[in-house]
Image (cartoon, rainbow, N blue to C red; front, side):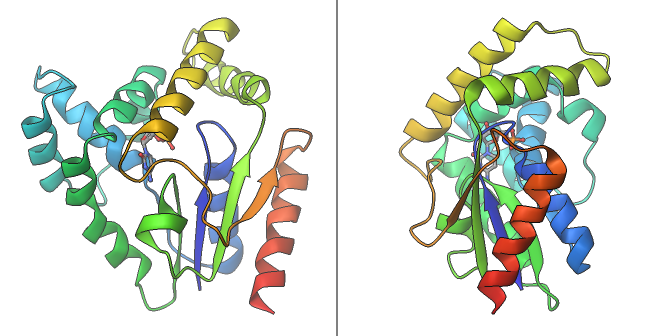
Length: 207
Ligand code: DC
């Protein structure tokens, strides 16, 4: 079974994908980490984030397993990832590895922006997770505080609005629900309710 989870920044899709993967015993790929790793590689090499050639070559050289999550999950890396993710050549360089991951014999859970539309259009279950920008900013503020990273709510809300715009308005594989995706608005849900709801969606699709 392939489960595709898409949605905007801080919608809770990553947590839901991880929980679903645990529940069904499936491997999980957080595809945002790939774009974050490309951005981190440019920053580490002192290259401009808009350098398409350097970004494409970083994407081509990326391994699928060695992610330094503590570094990649920071606030600035999300913003930087969204810049390199708008480059068609970077996206093209990352497609095959994501599709190979999804084709594992037992199936997989992948989360990102274009899983249901581009990476796994044939996925058995597609969920598009949303939440209001304000709710997402509150969740992200709590998450960053737990990591010891300082950022105020207004800055995070502005980050989220900018990232939503960039991820949705780019020409190549923009953030949008697949025609056959089930929408899950988690604005008024805690994680347990959202997880129960996502399980219900998966089970309904399986039947
Ligand atoms: O899910 P995330 O916040 O870790 O993603 C970081 C950025 O990477 C996001 O702003 C856009 C990009 N991304 C993408 O374009 N396609 C994906 N499948 C996953 C992430």
